[in-house]
Image (cartoon, rainbow, N blue to C red; front, side, top):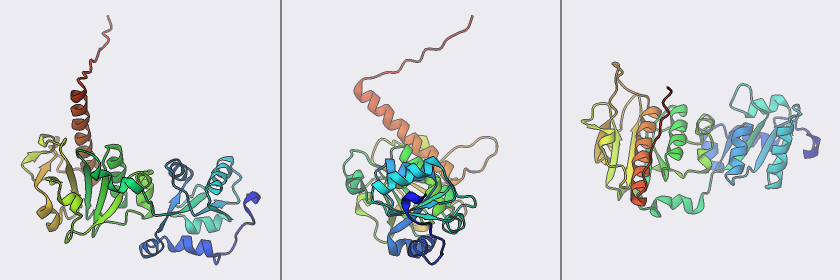
Length: 287
């Protein structure tokens, strides 16, 4: 990694100290920056148009993929810092890091921050008190895949920019607007949405009985505590996912994914109907 300068060996290096501080939520919001780890995630961030301010590369790993990634990040303006394997492990959140960690500024998605103002029927996810990082990251990934226009997280929800959430989100952070929601003063853009549906296990309405083609909010609460009182008050209706086999419930990420993709299915079907398109499925029968 000599192309990128001398290898840093001291934990007192200013960039190493900054990276280690970003393992804490308070520092992330003070610096407006977070850590992204691994070749795949950093490559995906670059593909989405994001660039790290600092990129740490394990100088003891002579991998072509790492060198190419470092060169691309450097061309985007990143400061590339070769470090020892021990220092990289002190920065990384995983036990066996892949050899690269980046410091990225909080995404500034420009016009996409107001994406739900610019579409006929916005679809918004509200994560209410989701404490498990894996669940929140999976919900972010599902929201992106289902075509949601934004995600709001409420007080009590784990930090969406925590390392485990970022890994589970699989690049959603760089493509999907994420904002904090204060129930005492909800964003007027979502308060004006008439269809605000919360998932609960004891609801009378089944989730696929809702018309999800209208502007809608999907509210998913904590597995342990359920919806907060404020979320229940904000919701205009509650829905359940019927389960077979004696299963009592799905986890928050699975429940949110099921509902988000039902909304996506209905919206695709409406779009096809609007275009006058039909789909014929031909099956082959073996003699």
